[in-house]
Image (cartoon, rainbow, N blue to C red; front, side, top):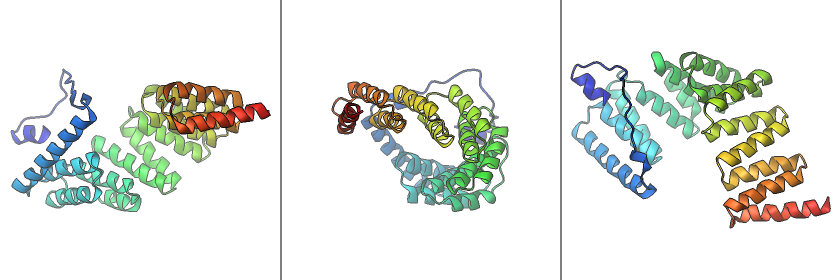
Length: 274
């Protein structure tokens, strides 16, 4: 909507109302049909307006985010940047995040090093750089980027969570765990928040806290993998009964899951041996 508003010479400003969008509440099959339709429209749009960078960005986002068609996404974002490098931060940030997804972090950093961004976009740039540095194991540089990102996007709990895990890995355990706790309290619905807390507790050798965090994740986001992870941590602590209890709860939700059934048998044998 924004380019159309700006093309009319109108100003963008915060509104005093909320628009509720329910487009993603349909079935997976309906979503896929909608995505295919939008991709078709996007391809028609770039054919009709090949010199419109926004058209290439729209198609690139569809190819990248909905279809994981990385080669097409790269081509679209590069065309948008070639047409008008400074019209928007979206193509550069999207391309950098795509590079990180395909484990080309150095290319992401090289791209962003040559782009100047302001406002919230500058915060997103620093967050993306932090992700690239983190994946490369350059933790001090990752921490510095996350701190700069958090200074701009102070309300973004995801950045605080990533910064917290980075600090724990750097040995700043108290500070990092405090950040992770605050981030989890602010956004407990995202499994990644729980995942980082579990990893941080294990790194800090706080196994009881790791087990509690894993069981909270298994309770709030139940699936066989999260249930098995919580049981594995309890088993590592030789708390066989607690591990078995977790598996039994999991089997109530997923009674036919073969991995859960196998682990249940193994824990029963271990309890008998003990």
